[in-house]
Length: 200
Image 1 (cartoon, helix red, strand yellow):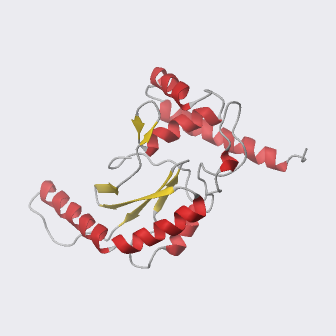
Image 2: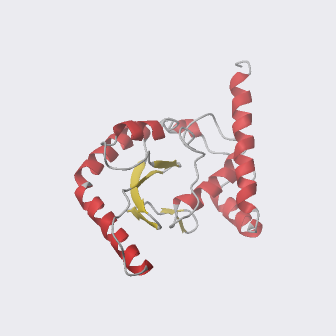
Image 3: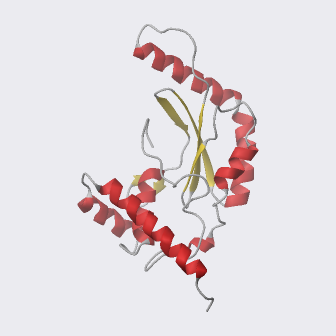
């Protein structure tokens, strides 16, 4: 997830770590603790004053990423490069000042959700992530890329991440992002209908 990049997860309460078993060929989500309440948990657990609004919380099988908005910088800057440098410096200061507390919160979250926690912060047009996971699949992929593969596996389009990666490469095009969003929405509807059905 780079600066101003897309953020997956469907908003608060909708992670990809909990819920029933995935579709044909999908992995068993129930093997992991549900992270459906991760956004609410972090919103309640984080100290007041860290961020100016509730953080963006993104969940996949391995990682929870928490990115918060820091207060805007005051004052004038010579140009955009100077402002970006000041924003980066402020993020670095936040990272150092909150390190111990973030480690403790991450420890609690990892115990609760069974996933590693990565942190990030943004000011204006500057966004930085701290020590995010890079998980080996066929190559090392960041969370945003892993979520695409897991969506394809969950929906039964592919049987594994490696097969999903090959399929995704062929699919790449202008409307891929829109199609994946529609697919996730359809999967949510299927989960809701399954939950309303009779137990076997």
